[in-house]
Length: 88
Image 1 (cartoon, one colour):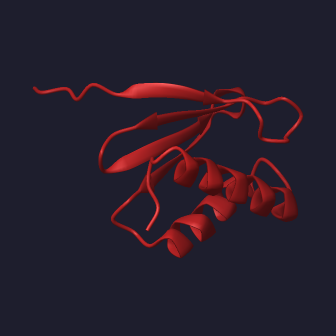
Image 2 (cartoon, rainbow, N blue to C red):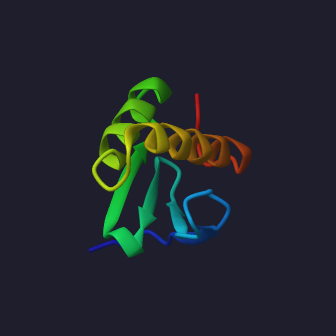
Image 3 (tube, rainbow, N blue to C red):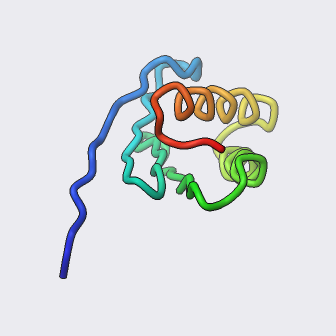
């Protein structure tokens, strides 16, 4: 079985009371996770950004309120764009 090497980065400035957001990336996707919440979301670059953002908001709406989920999703999206991890 072939395993692909992945890089894990920490994104600390998310504005959600100091809970750390981690990013793992490959050429095709970024895995966004918040281990403290036992939460993750696969940001698949083959899917449109708008669909991904809506899916991320929905996934985050379970551990947090909708408005906070929208704000955190936008921060995650901007981080991914800024760090060349994806975005179309």
